Length: 639
Image (tube, rainbow, N blue to C red; front, side, top):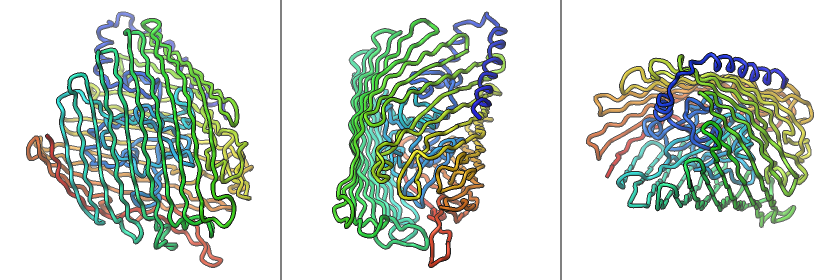
């Protein structure tokens, strides 16, 4: 199976080569520089600035303007528009929210905030339930294995979030809104630069009761990015984030829990130094200390007798990156990474087993990447070695390329890479197996991006294929083992258009095949479709500014052909669902706006996650229902 995708990548490279040789050699350097300056840059593809239209990685960008226009409050809702991503929320806001990338689960995807890894918790995944968009400048989604430059959990790809960096006179924006389900939300953001100091800060508070008993949600979040730049070559800064969330957990429809709450507290502090002594040498050093605490009370999820629990997660990381521009066309990127993670759970009232269980993991890694940029042809090759105290060394590599044809404004890109995801503390602790090996992936993609009508229309398509091995699963006796293998492949398409002034159109479509390819894991037979992975997803949005005062935005999503877990039997089909959201904002003057939105306009009744439960001897399908129609309105003040 692996030969086929490799051949596709090699074929794309062979196609690019003769086109390069035939390119007009008289293209001026000035024209090339003008194009690069006009094109937005991305970082996630290579760990340094690169024009968006030359990215060798399949990448999508969501900017702050898009977030404002759609009145998006959480990062997970922003990611619903990205092809290749499937957002799965176990019910209403505040409940566990996972993101599958190219059919691979959240624990196989690295999430970064200004370069700081923020995957946390016993499961090693990132729960997007409580991550708000406060102070966010843009979100970059790089799909395909990125472990060579981003290390553990970048098996499927990377979601990288960038905060604002203050550049002009200080300004403040305040919002206050209320609406359906006894919902109230307040936000405050500010950024600016005073002398050599720059800052940006964001804070928000959300209170809602949602639709069901014991479904209340309270979330407080704050984030700040500050820096001092005594000259143009040096910036000494720091990032701080804190979030406190309290969510009632009503469980599935036919098994309501009258009293069960999950309290989650997260914070981290990440000082950093960015230093560029010359225009051909760049250094970045990030130190991070983060902490997560979860209290589940009275913990009605676990076996009888467990009682309330408290989970703790503490991590220290050091990330150093060095970019050396050897010549005008060759850049070497290398770096070192260190991580120390402690995770555990206190179960003081358990009547069986230990009252304190835990895990500790150390990791040290080094990577080297070479990026050649010759007349619009970019070729990237890199390798990385990660050394863990528990299971030894893991080697990964990545080869990627892109070529931009100026005459037709077309970009071709392809990549071949390996990735890995280490076993989580949860896998090791609750499966009583500290000898687990990392899950591994061999991934390939080939794509094209076409710009039309003076860049007013951008359309892209990418084919991808992943072969997974060492997949961690259960053996039927509540033990975790490296049992499985799986395969995912599909097609991602994306369109962005600005046909007339003040009108923005977006669309994306994902086709996904995801199946288990061996029979080792007895929970599912060989050939079963991986659960919660839709075969088809379609996203559409349109935004228009009327008379320079009123902005209206509508977005819709359709998801079909999903299956859900049915242990010891084939998975069962889950019905399709769709939703439509509408948002509007009217600017009364430059300092004051009123806004409103309708979520789930058609009042669709659906669940993104289903579950089989038993009533007596009868199997019953039951879900975690999402919210019905909700109406919200508020005001925005700018100073």
